[in-house]
Image (tube, rainbow, N blue to C red; front, side, top):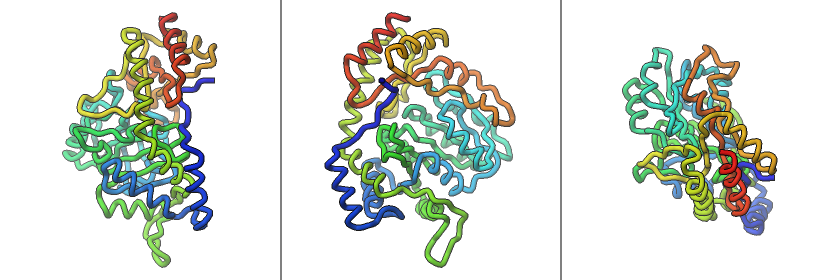
Length: 357
């Protein structure tokens, strides 16, 4: 069975050495030495000032909302994984959607300003499939209206914009390190925060709001990364350049062989790529379903990322209709891409496209 992705596992002996270290010092969680080491290495690798490691990407979003003390309405994208929206609702925030650009799949900045009201507290864009948003335009809008700005960068590990990490834009950027991601820690995530005081506040919030043994200044939760997860991250980080290069080869083959048959995502020309996903858009949903069925019959399972469009969720109030997002969501399919994706299987995927389109 071929799924849309396959978790990358590092050298077992290397991971075992870290496990042995955990057993030796008996420090399993609560900001242990491996977690501290991973934070330092990631900050250096990504080119960011402060990184706060957490238990998962959804927790990263929720801690970001609490760190910035968001209230009321947050303008966000309808084209994302459901956690972008559900995390807002779970934290008593109201998502208001701005439609996307039909080519980049990112929130279109020109749709933001008309939605801003006195109840708006923040903007939450997503770097969809690792494609950098128009960060300068969005930052300018946030500054103009004194709004907080959080970038959901779950897909944007190691993406740069004009030579600088895209994670440095906004008040906070959040990452997901789930096992399906380009870089992973089994489960995990992170917040990138340039402001030192906010970074410290986030650290308190992920540890029940505790400052020290005698002070609990915030209402917090438990969102800490453990040492076994940090150990996996240290192993993966050693291999990350190799991982990216092999995924690039797979993606380049898709683009070369499927050119003219499907639409590929338009990339931000001022940003680098991390080769995390291969989304393709069909002319209509019927074509998608036909190709998907043919692939499934060969035990190949691409994923309809992102479907459905989040403005169609039943629990969203008030009801909103994002026409571009709804249209793209019905026609988009993410193809299998991972490090050891066999060439003959990729050829089979490509041949099925050519036979059915």
